[in-house]
Image (cartoon, rainbow, N blue to C red; front, side):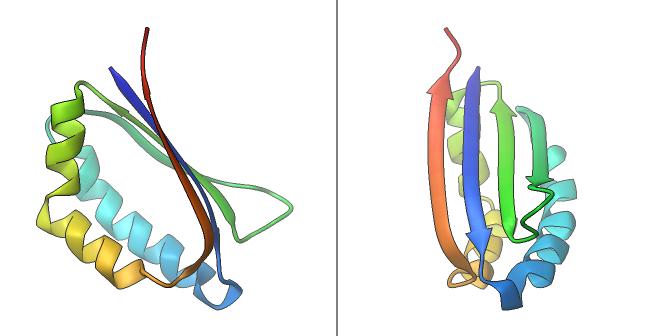
Length: 93
């Protein structure tokens, strides 16, 4: 099993747009083969701080997910909307 965490901070003018786009694409992601969990959390006191938590059956399924048209479109559309983004990928041991 693969765990992905993405800590991100949106630029304030893009926070609502990012959240709306995430909601739209997340339904497609959750329907993908191998997706066990795909959830976005918002830090209460900082409305532009988010944590994306993902669980995938295999690394290959995660890699396939990143190549889907809905993800490549989402990544391209939201590029430049962030002050910071920190992505970490873990294997469950």
